[in-house]
Length: 303
Image 1 (cartoon, rainbow, N blue to C red):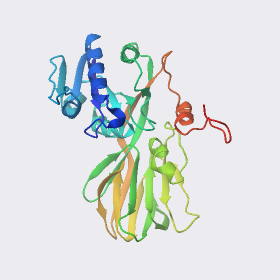
Image 2: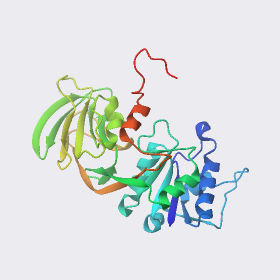
Image 3: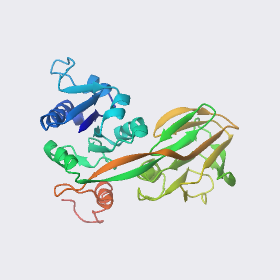
Image 4: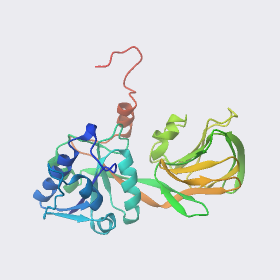
């Protein structure tokens, strides 16, 4: 089995993850010692595979390759990072259909299922013995006059200045409504626990085949989040003001009055690996309870 090992994409191990270099090295050693081929992407190599003096390590037992090469050759990928690293890697590898397992080094970890202290041998056992389930996550394609970009969480169009923007929304080319406010986000079920949730959108199970449209601080209070079929397309026309497009939290570019943005479900999908072992078993509802503190009732002391 060829296992890709990918580290978080901030370029450094911050104070909260000061042991990340050792964690990646130890996991790569475990993969090799168990008789499997280790591939590490070149960015992870440059950022984290270094000795105590900061010198770059070139382990002959590890293949250091660009993500494109990994995509063409690896059987699966194990990602050490937070949800942001999973988003970045998922889009980069989406055309190769590689299943991905996330080891959580972030604050929440809605899409990274494995705790950072979970034994590495147990991770290998799980992968070798197929003690996991896979779940397909759908993506969005956002298009404008410049080109196309993929989103796994959301596409956000927000005001670029202190002034509110005015915009029209068309669904499947049919006029839906016009609104004024700070903007609009179009989210996948995966992204429903991210910015969309903070803006008042519903939490959507990741297997639901829907998209959600969440207005950002609309002036008309009856302009509420809207759930539509994920086979529908959404057109955003900027009527007045200046706005930015952000795809999974990264600014793509500014748009001006009269411009239209098209958003629809992309052809590509991502396969997430979920643990299903005696030691670790994935449950979406357990994830929500744990990450959102649903298990704590008002007035109940936290233990």
